[in-house]
Amino acid sequence: MLAALLADLLHTLSMTQDRPAYQAKKRFYGRMLTIFGRKPVLEALQDSRLRPYRLHLADSNKSAGIIDDMLRLARERGAEVAYHDKQALSRISKNAKQDQGVALDIECEGFADVEDLIANCPAELDLMALDGITNPQNLGMIIRSVCASPMTGLLLPERGCARLDALVIKASAGTLFRARIYRCQDLAQTLGEFVRLGTAVYGLDVAAEHSLAGLRAKPRSIFVMGNETNGLSPEVRAVCTDRLSIPMCNGVESLNVSVAASLLAFRSLFR
Image 1 (cartoon, rainbow, N blue to C red):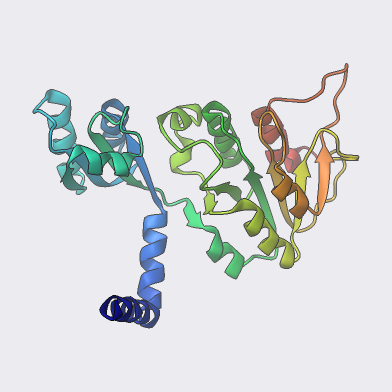
Image 2 (tube, one colour; image 1 turned 180 degrees about the vertical axis):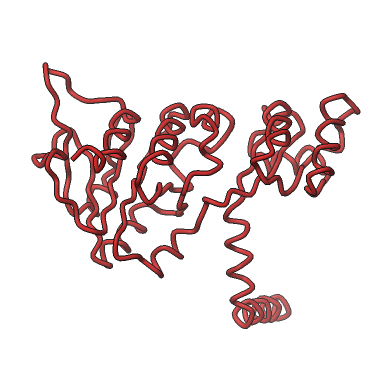
């Protein structure tokens, strides 16, 4: 027991002493996006705009044309190749039923850790945050809109939203790989840290008294889109400094969340 505690202490001390290297490594792996499935992986390796880092293969894969093509492309592009048993590969892909024995780590330059943004928060900030967006089609279309807009980027929690997979990539028309995405663990907690820095957090809510129309947003602003069915979660709602609605006509209650996100993303261009 004492030996184990001592080992943990030494490990913690070494990480603290080498914190710059640890932070650099954390940022590097934070830029990784793992996709799976033979066709998506092959297409990604064929796309010269993407930066493949490591190809993961199940050691039970039999030699086949598509596997051979992946190996050839990975080597041509300088990507590492790693072999795993099926169980280990499923932990990497997080989808044993659909990974087909293949996964690929891709380095996405636009992915960033929100802690760095909080530590060096700019004077002007225009973020969109997603709270429980579970439909991959909606998530992909929102990513595409934010990527194409003047917004700073998208704040996306690790838990509670649709996973960044082939369905999201397809719906985003490939913009996921170049979108500016800040990832966090707990959205409500992260939004609270921004509020303490003086950032306005606006929750989009169909029942809100204040309207998005004519809003004079603060220089630092975050706009939160809620779940497709239930809207904002209670935890996130409690953190919001204000709530906004989009004016509706002809008795229409609300818009699809991806449509609402598009209106929000491009609002500054039409004033």
